[in-house]
Each structure stands twice: as C-alpha cells, then as structure tokens.
Image (cartoon, rainbow, N blue to C red; front, side, top):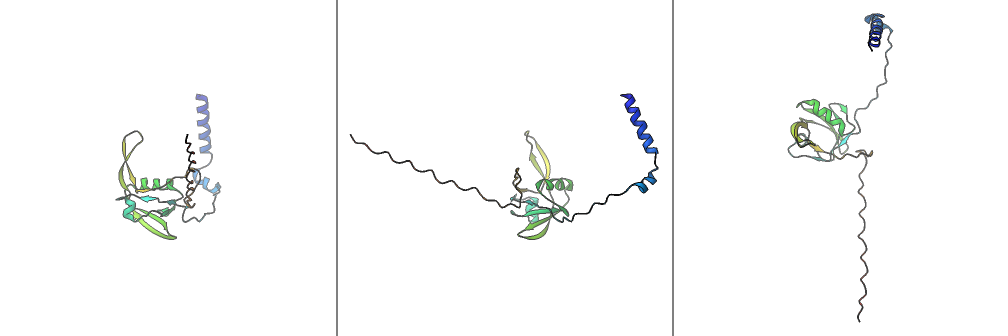
Length: 164
C-alpha cells in the first residue's frame, strides 16, 4: 500500500514540475460551448397560497406559473427550494406567468417552524404556496382532465310478492 502511495505521489510531483503554470495556458485549448438562450423555464405551477405568507404578501395567486427566480429559469418546484434557502431572508425576485402575461414580484421568504417526519420541529425559510407533484411525468403545462364520474349502480329488481 505504501509503495502505491509513494508511486502516486512521485508521479504527481513529476507531472506538476513538467510544465510551468504560466505556460499551461498557452497549450490548453478552450472549449467554447454555444450558449443556449433560455430566458425562462417551463415553470412551477402554484396550486394555492397560504394566508399571511410571503407569497401572499408578494401578490402570488393560485394558478400562477413561476418561470424564473432572480433571472434563473425554473423548470419545477425542486428548482425553487435552493433559491429560498440561499436567500437567507433577503428578498428574491419571482418571474411569474399569469394569464399569458409575464409579471415580476418580490418576496422575502419567512422563517417558519416545519414539523419533521420524526416528530421534531425545524425552522426553514418558506414562500408559503402549495403545489401538486406528478411523479409519472405530467408537467405543469398539461391540462388537468378530471376522471369521469362513474354512473350510479343499477337498482336491483324488486322481488315478486308471493301470496299463499
């Protein structure tokens, strides 16, 4: 094991001394990716807004589609949480698609007590809106079609009355 570590250390030392750091830039070729212009993501649909929450104070409504936060595209609800957590109480800018119009809202996530699965309570910053997760690929752009209501079961025929 020591021989392997010694050999690896020796190889790294030889590789590091092979070319000076200032010369490495001359020999390296840069990969330039073609930028994809995606201004807004597919969005996260807001199903409901909690009363007295940051979302309600900002003007978020049920049916809104959050398509960007702080200029970054949002594709689903899991993209929203890192921005709320990283904000540390500072306001965030929400780009919202409401009825075909793009509007911009500012919200300051509130520190809220959230129950944990093990019976405890932890504090988290939250916007205060609710959403529905579709685990099998349904996106927020799909139109919800309620399932058909089954017809009432047929009434059984009345048995004949037999008089003896």
